[in-house]
Amino acid sequence: MSGGHDPSSVDAGAARPPGWSSQPLPRSPARAVKALLRSVFRDPRTNEKLLLFFAAQVRETLTARLLRAHGRILGGLFEGLAIPAHVSHRNLAFAQVMGSYESFLQAVIAEVAPRHDRFVDIGCACGFYTNGVAKRFGLPAVGVELDAEQVPLADAIAAANGLTDVRHVHERPGYDLLTYLQDGALHLVDIEGGEWELVERVRPETLRRAGFLVELHEAGGRSIADLQAAFEARFGATHEVRWVREAFPEDEVLGRLQALGVPRTVGLMALAESRGIYQIWADIRPR
Image (cartoon, rainbow, N blue to C red; front, side, top):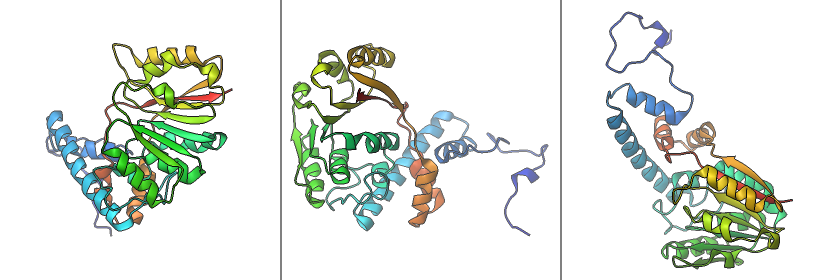
C-alpha cells in the first residue's frame, strides 16, 4: 500500500483550510507554485510578493552554485559557452545559465543565422548573444551596449571562449544606431523602446540581405500594434515580416535541473519567474 496522499480520497463535504481548491494544479511548474501559494494566503498581493521574493532568492542562489560548479552555459543553443569566474549570477540570469533564456528566439536564430555573414547585437548587455552566436556559428560579431560595466564582462566571455572576431562597444545615450547596421548581417535589437528610431529611419532598400530580430515595446503613447504596423509598412516591400511570441520550455528545464541533482521543489521556485508581459519580437527576413 502506498503511503502517499490521494487527493481524490478527500471527503467532498469535509472542512478545508481557507483558500483550498479542489481543482488540480496547472501543469506549468511556475503556475503550480503560484496556485500552491494561493491555497495558503487569501490576499493575492501577499501571495505575489512572497512568490517573487522566494523565487528571486532561489534563482540567485541556484545560479551562483551552477556557475561555480560548471562555469558554462548548461543547455540551449549556446550550450558549453564558457563563463569566467568573475562573471557572476548578478550578470547572467538563471534562464541564461540553463540555456532556456528566450528559447523561442534561440530557435529563430538557429534557423536564420547560417544565412548571414555576421552578427550585430544592439543592446548586448554581457554578450550572451554575441558570444553565443559567434561560437556556435563562427560568425564575426559586434555588440553595442550603454552600460559601461557590461562591456568588459562581454569581452571576458569572448576571451574565455577563444573568440577573436567579437567586439563589444560602449556607447552613450543618443548614439546613432544606424551606423551599426550592415547589409548581410543578422541584427538583434533589444533597446527598450528605441526600436521606433530604427523603424522610422532605416532604409530597407540598402539592407536587402540583412535580417532583423527586434523586441517590441510600448513607448511614447504608441502601442505594440502601432509598432507592428510600422514595421510591416517599412519593410514589407523588401523583407518578409513575421511575429514571434514568447514561449518557455518549463518541463524541459525542470528535467535538466533534476538531472543535475536539483530537488524538484527548488526547480519549481527557480522557474517561478514572470516578466510581466509576453514578449513579441519582429522576425524580419530578406525576401
